[in-house]
Amino acid sequence: MIEFHYVAQDENGRRFNGSLKSESKDEALSTLAQRYAIVTRLEHRAPRTSINLFGNRIKGEDILGFCETLSAMLEGGVTIKASLDTLLGDTENPALRNVIMDLSARVGSGDSLSAALTQHPDVFDSFMVNMVAAGESSGELPEMVLRVASYLQKTEEMKDKLRSALTYPAVVLGFAGLLVAAILAFGVPYLKDLYSGLGIQLPYPTRVLIGIGSFLGGNIVLSVLTFFLLSFLLRAFLQSSTGQLTLAKAKLQTPVVNGLFRHLYTSRFARTLSLLYSSGIPLLNALELTGNSIGNSLVAQTISQTQEDLKSGGSLSDCLRKNPYFSDAAIGLVAAGEESGRLDEMLLKVARFYDRKVDVKLEAVTSIVEPLIMILVGIVIGGIILAMGLPFLTLASNF
Image (tube, rainbow, N blue to C red; front, side):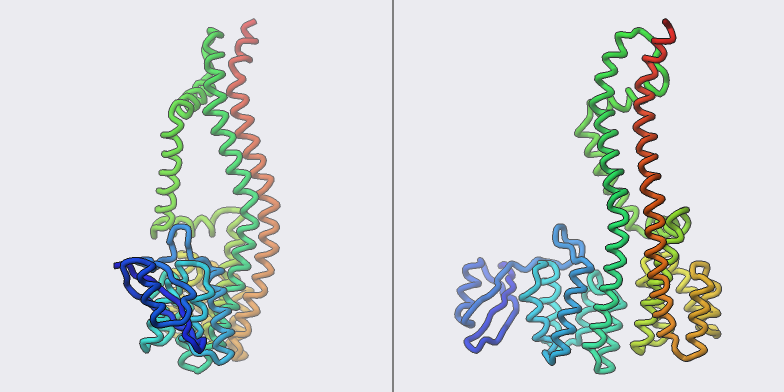
């Protein structure tokens, strides 16, 4: 039996969705035609939902659109179940449709929206779940979902800026890598035959390049498979706890880019904590959720330590002074917010201030990295040309 998901309407235009098991799509359509006037969608339900479905990843922009639409419909007085049903019919991403279908089924069976969201931790993180739960408790669910949408929008804008800044260097490095591989695989073996007729002892750099080029040229399929295998292993390593910690240290300690990431994490910390705290979530819980959402395991560890220090007594600003990744200016604004009783407002000011610093730092880093990449590419290609030309220089010196 195959499980299908459907969206249909009755004679009065009321919308329904659900799932049924049938031997084929035609049989499922025949069954639904007996119940409803119109079947607007009928598709095979995937056996599992995941954020990593190949070709159908649920991206941040998908979650942003989900939150914006859901907030607008709830604000207009539409029930949660009806809102999810409408979203289900309008969502193009199959993976997200699968998730929304499950949310609708759980809400229809009596679960709260926050409880339904917890069943998909790979899609909805603890930050969003707790914001929704706070909205349900306070009776301000539409407002809380809108706040989540605004937060996600700012986060996606920052990600887009980082992607734009990294696109040019990545394209240049990728093209340079392909060019070097082509020279080694196809150009070097041709010169090898030429060198063999010279009758001279080849310099060591030339022999090394000939060895590499001969291997690549004679084992193209193996070389390509090795490249993809190494890429897979690198990705697996970066997804492991050790790899994430290594990458986290690299972001915070590598010259040129470390200042950029420190500003970025300060902004993200302040904005997330401000949103959670202003939504009525206790400060200790808000710190825990902020650490989980910061995007850097090393910074998350220091925030966890800040949380433990806060449990022992003292103010948030005093506890943050022990954190090596937040500047005195940011901590000073936090202290001013505590003294005035406007901590959430001051945290938001910190976020906006460091957003501007991230923009400035991003432009500075880009202006430095791009020339460095061009110099590096020039050195590599120039080194290859020089190494392959050494035999001719040796031959000329013999004359």
